[in-house]
Image 1 (cartoon, rainbow, N blue to C red):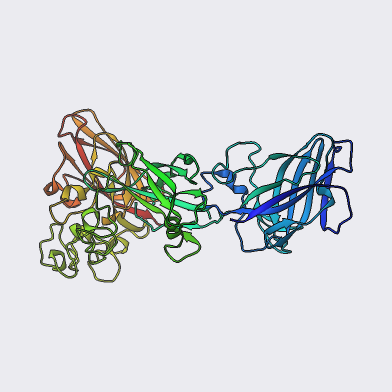
Image 2 (image 1 turned 180 degrees about the horizontal axis):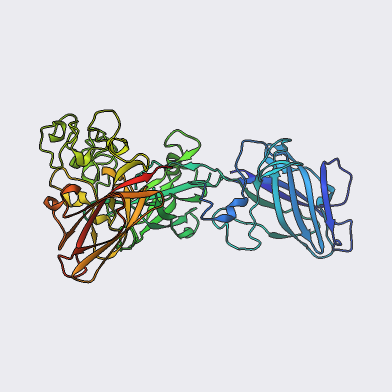
Length: 566
């Protein structure tokens, strides 16, 4: 830890060489004997702290980036009595560290009683002549250190500095007190986002401690997790200081999927010489997410202790000085969260253990193995004469219900983009689409679980307005909404109203309705559904018999969605 040090001296006035500039003074000096004075001398104490997301603590926006530049000048603002001064002064260095050059403006008149001095601002610059950005000053260069201020909000920097500004102290004739002024800079690192298919951090020497979580349902399905984190700083003196209370991540929807940004917090460096001595404590509280995985047990998890070695490993885990790894939390995931040594193996080598992998894809064709009719050349879907329930109309060895490009005339153009099969004057291309039932537990793959290969799609239960997504495929993506289906019932009938999204039309509509949850044998190819509508204006309301007689029915809506030509 470096220090900016403030020396106070009381002495008679005498001539000295000094360097200073940009002096401002207002008001009158206290004391009746101007020959008695205290001379201020400043030096620098740099607290290396760590990166916290600016979205969480906006007051860190005023802390400059850490740099390797040497300090050149300091701009210091202080007051005593009715006098306020702002002084720009050169920074000097000796074997004890950095300090300010002597300046006449640092002389504080002292009378018979002690004089109180308040330090309001302390900023250190590198003296660079060129630069840009919010921390560059044309006269002084880049701001590299700053003493943090809590003038308007006490407690903002608890745990980071022992004494934030404003700082008030007394000076007396005949004494030379020594006072440390702590300054900060911020190590801005970008957190690594490994692209988990279910999940920015802005870069500031404060160090980053970042978190990301998975939540596992009792059945083992992984979701992006919601949670709160509390953090304590333990310097070995008294009780640990709580520096964060129940901080939670930003959550939302990305590409139709529930997502969360990593939660990044700023922590101080270790106060201990031993890098393996614990000094950071964190505790995670799982949070419910009604729109995603629902309501869960929110009992706080056990506290975890971290040493500087632990923090440093996160900062350098990928050998990239610009990024930091996050702590990956696994909530309710048992002993095998999907990382590390896989007891069940990792057959598709995607880093997720097989027993918690939602999509094992050994041949890496982006089709989950339990829905793939042809895996590495083996399977019914690889043989045109094989047992493809949905058929293989173009005889390419891929069953029609999982074939992304059916090409009957073998002209290299997928039929849903081929003018021989669609009205190219009206449409640019067509894709398969399914209605999402607003419930991830109503996916076809859940119904097929344990019963081999299966189709992709969703089921909805009862009335509601549901989004229809095109080209979701076996990856269950939801990044292309093409319309909505509004489903209602009067008991005897089920009414389905189809509305297209701008730029799309449906040329086919296939609907199946069930009195209870269908099993895997009920999920036929769309062309075999109970109800099939096929023309070039499939929009509006359709009426069907209600097999349940109430609002507990289950419904599947499939469409061929075509984008309109310009």
